[in-house]
Length: 338
Image 1 (cartoon, rainbow, N blue to C red):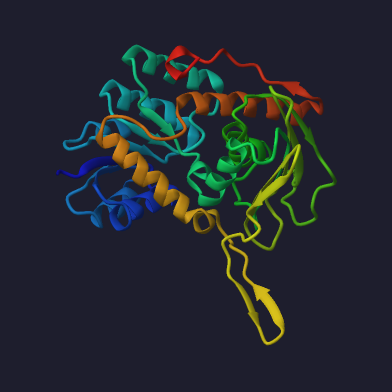
Image 2: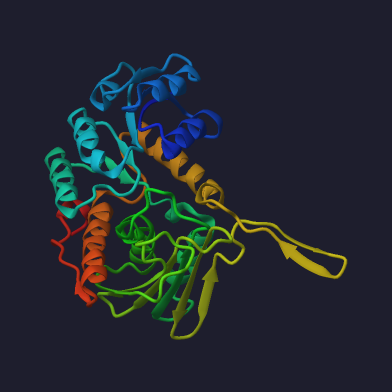
């Protein structure tokens, strides 16, 4: 059986990590082309791959011989164009979030898939592949907690990179909770409120960190998200579901190791999302490779990317205006179960 040939678009932190993952931990695939505007960096990445082509133009990489599927890890504003090139060749796509920075771009991708008559785009919301999140989803689906009433979420980073902005608190960080909540509850988010306490003294000036984001679902569940990207001590993601007859909580382990010895208990806290969700990234990529080999996808799709973009837009407006903001979204297309 031949290996699935993958073109990786973007060779920054995430792209390079995916290249390594495909080579080291994911079977059934190989990287045959890489693309990045940084010519020196893309050549360096390609040099470590047997026979892979190096390109500065994503379209050229996608059109390279042997490409069967496309993994996009470039900055969000470049996603739509790269996806369009892949869809014109009817290639399966795994695109890191956001699908597009705005709902309109996501709708154009949905329309392109509608014309093809099948789903080819998967969005990299890797939490759906995390073992703890999968267990929480199973508990909720089984009705073990009764009807859900609340989700309490914490999303903390040790520090934010220099390029991080206040808008990115919503569009790049809370967007993970947006997708996780939609998936866990099976409900769309209909309104967003963003509350701002006093800013942390260690947060970069103007960032407005931390925030409390309240999401309302169509079925009446309230989701609260503490987003704090300069907490100082590590990377921490937790989620507690509160139902009519019980609660379930994940994430307190944080991916670190707790030691009990000589009358003491101590441990470590994971410092980075690529460590905390390493297994989720592995599982996501394995399932996508298997699905792409059959010409399809196996996870959150373009509709999920659109829904996240619509909620993010409402969240950005809520943060700017300081008022509860309703989510404006189109009806779910028939291709996506509408």
